[in-house]
Length: 165
Image (cartoon, rainbow, N blue to C red; front, side):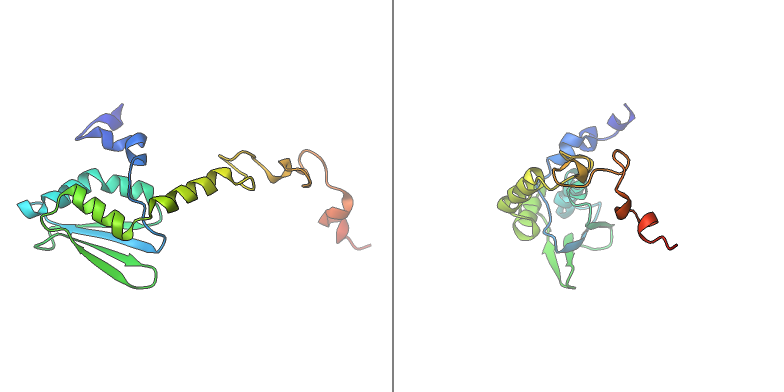
């Protein structure tokens, strides 16, 4: 398996990516992290990027994630919101766990919201399509069956409805 090569290949497994705790609020659009490769005050930021950034990218597919290396003397995180505002988080001399916990508390969705979204996604009988209980809406009682299975009545087809003699 070629994806299991390299440093810490566990980071490329779906179990690891799904275990991410940080799901951004809907208004977060850009997440940028600036840090240096050298220096002891950047160790937490480097570890955060190495261990938690893949999970963040996987859990938040609609958020742009940017990492800026060797551009600033002290590491920081900047989040941009959809209304034009932004926040700046100083992560100088913090561990990766402290950074993650701070981000969960400030820009992450709460556990109650995540649980409500999971229940809404699973239990809604109106959902249909790939990965849902029903592949097509025609499987519901009271709906018109698919034209490929049962032909539509002629008055419902445009070919006959709009034909002029």
